[in-house]
Image (cartoon, rainbow, N blue to C red; front, side):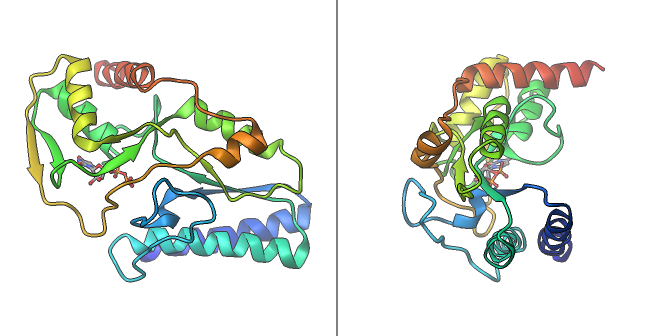
Length: 228
Ligand code: UDP
């Protein structure tokens, strides 16, 4: 955790210093985690968030929040061309197969035919964006006029429960895996869905890849990795 906070904050300062010296445009890959366990739904960019500063997740959340602060301080003090994207849950081929996140865990478990580990009762929600859609959004943000800094949400509005994700992956892989329920980690957000009106308006961007198509490509990638 100490390293996570330090990397977010120290890394941002180093890169902002470099961008200042070279005059480069600079993008902060921020996160929906800045909203914490949100009390408004869906989340718009003007929602300031609900983060526990001393919880087990806060190293990441607060590190990223502080990085956003630094970006906007550099903008105010040095008028730098900054861009801040708040990235919601993303998945796709070439994601780390053992990153421990939900899509990778569930696909690994389904393909191996072992129990699918649902944390909590599986009613918590997330909204999953396919990687190609996200990358298109990031490119559009970098190409946007200098006056548009964000922060801007980039994500898919298709919200689902974690249990639904497990059942979808079991169905798509024709797996014999069963669901098992494990304790919910502390401060795990109950619901998360981006409001992407701003990205639509300013970047003319919205996701176009369906969840099923994205998952199909991702499952094939995991199968190739296992065969290799
Ligand atoms: N999750 C789960 N089983 C797993 C991994 C994650 O039920 O094997 C849940 C996790 O508790 C959370 C959701 O899936 O509610 C998304 O978790 P992930 O770590 O992928 O992303 P984040 O919590 O950062 O949105």
